Structure formats: C-alpha cells, structure tokens
Length: 168
Image (tube, rainbow, N blue to C red):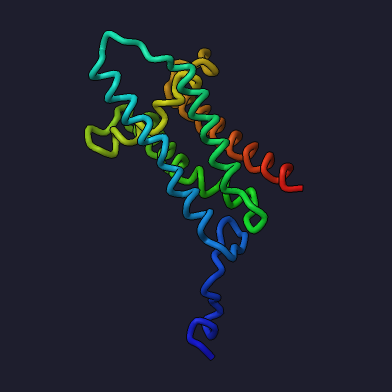
C-alpha cells in the first residue's frame, strides 16, 4: 500500500466544514476571492484621503460590492461542491476579520496602530455605509461590522442557491 493510503488519507479529497470535496479549485478560488473587499476598501480609502473634497456614492458602492459577492458565489458553485463549502470558504477571511475587529473594539476599545489594525478596518469599508444604515439604533461600530458580515454570508448563500436553481 502507498503511505498515504495507510494513513487513511486520499490525496484528492479535502474536508471543509465536514464535507468531503473531490476538487479543490473552486474552494481555493473562493478563499482567494474572499480577500476582494480588502482590495476594494484600500482603493476606497486611498480615494477618500486623496480627494478629500469629493463624495463617493457610498450606498451604491455597498450594494455593488454585495452584488459582486453574490456573483462570485454564483460563478464558483457547481455540482461537485456544496453551497456550504463555497459559503464557508468565501467568507472565511471575513469571519477572521470580524474576530479581529471584535477584539479591538469590544476588549481593547481601540484599533491597533499597525497593518493588522488597518487591514481589519479596510476590509468592511466598502459595505460599511449599508451596515450603518441598518444599525442606526446602535452606537457601536461593531454592530455595523456584524451586519456587513451577515449580509455577505446571506448574499453568498443566495448566489449559490441561484446557481443550483439554474443548473436544474
């Protein structure tokens, strides 16, 4: 027997969220696309700091990023992958970022003054307007971040389910 077989490991099968996957490509691509809001947030931050007198259409940007998020989930979901695997891998970076923001806001009551502190704030920046609009009752920024995360998970789930409906 091969050593990998003796250990009970099958080389082309990966387990994500308790689901065995035969192909890694869409799951890995979903994880990579999970960092896309950070790139958009960095560009938005640069624009806001460079052109201080101009105002961006923040509501439109929020909706556009969420639509893009759903389209990514739609395109990555296929018959060999479950909705759960795509949603988890696409939102894994977002959940890590939410954890970092929670530590900074709820426990430390301040943002870290390093690249991790900046990264965690830039990630949700494109969707933050919508998050604040839905949580105007709260005085905490963290509730807006949680709302943005919930919207991202919901939109990616809807994108995957739409793809399943089109494949039938």
